[in-house]
Structure formats: C-alpha cells, structure tokens
Image 1 (tube, rainbow, N blue to C red):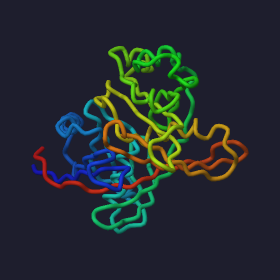
Image 2 (cartoon, rainbow, N blue to C red):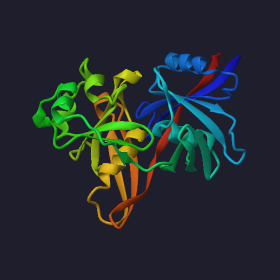
Image 3 (cartoon, rainbow, N blue to C red):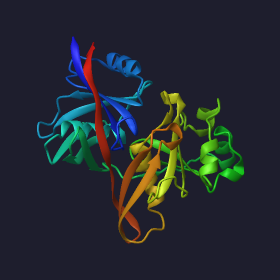
Length: 288
C-alpha cells in the first residue's frame, strides 16, 4: 500500500541545511524488517515511523531507525516529528523507546517550526572510557589534538565525548577502520567531538559526530549526543539556567544549530532541554 511520507531538515531554519529526516505516516502493519528496509531506502541519518500511541493521552508512538538499526531515542527525529505532528498545537507527547517525551511546539510560516523537549533521562557517566591515545588513533589524529580526557555519557544513547583543541583538529578528524573496536563499548562506536572554538558568531561549541557502524559515516546534527554532552557542559557551571548553542555539520556543508538548556541547583544538573528549528522539504508516498 502507498504510505505518505514527508522529509524535513532539522536544527536549521533553512532547507538543504541541518539534518535531514524522513517521517513515514500511518505505519500500522509494517514489521521491524520492513521499517529497517524503508530506512535503508531513504538512506537518511534517521527515519521515523508514526504509529498510534499506546496511551490515548499521547499524540503518537514513534519508532526511529538509522539505515542500520533501531534507536530507542534520538534528538533530531524528536524535534522534527514534534514540528510536523504538532502543527497548530502548543505541544505534543511522543512515545519513544526511552519513554514518553513532552515537546513544546511553535508553528512558524513556510513549513517551518520550532520545538523544545525536556530530556526524559538526564545524562549519566559510564565507568569506562577509551584512552585518549586510542581515540586519537581511531579519528586519524595525534594525541596532542585531544584537549582532555574522553568520557562516555548516555541520556538514552551512549556516546564517547571527545574534547579537541580547536577547529583545525576538528577538520582533520576522520574515522579509521578500527573505529568501532577503539571507540565502541562492545558495539558500534559513537563519537561526539567538541571544542570551544566556533565557526558561527554567538555559538558556544563546535561539534562533529561519527557513527559509521550504525550507517552514519557523519551526522550533521545529533540531539541525542548533545543530550549526553549536557553532563559535560554542566560541569563547573554556576547554579541557574543556561542556554548553549552547539554548531554541527559545518564540515559537511549542512550547518546546524542545536540549543541545549541546562538548569543547575547546588552544583547538580536538575533538568536539561534540547531545542531547534525544522523545515519541511518534500512530501510523497512510498509503497510498502
């Protein structure tokens, strides 16, 4: 049967920038294998399948796939789906593998919108992390390019967070064939690289994300990685509410900006949000 779909560019106000996303509507009747095949066909960083919610008080249930596997949670699919499904609404609640995600939505003109969601799970630090030398080797860099100690954090999806010295090191980073063995934690590796030197005025961090074992050689904007990064970004900040802008995708010619909100009390991260814009790019139907 023909199933309607839309594509959006997420974490950008401009078409053909940001992180592309496919949303397949009316996904009832599709099994996991069919969803994975459709995600491979679109070959975008993620494809979302919209299903009826299990809780009637919620707006939809989402299943999220990369070209290689299913994810319990991801940031740019959440923002994109909230903008698309929340047109004309103040907010939506989306059921994901991690649990229900509450999103505030603002519908703008010309197919554009803005969404913000509170992290359903605050970031937690893993007890294990790869050595800086191994991370540098996995990324085709020298040990001097790594500006601190890599760490692993998860707010629903685990990432290895890698501080680099600046944009020069960022530009030279490239995953090697042993990337998963060196960066992964018993599975496909996901590395989120960051530095305080930025390309865009007013931005706080520059970032790149690699996950070749998940079918994502590089991602233009990674909300789930920024959610994990909230644990690092909150460290040492004063109490209160902070708004940080993380740029990503510049090396891919798909500039993106992710808003990270932090709320700290007594030196402890109490809440965090991810926000950004999305814009509709195309609509069509896929037979499946």
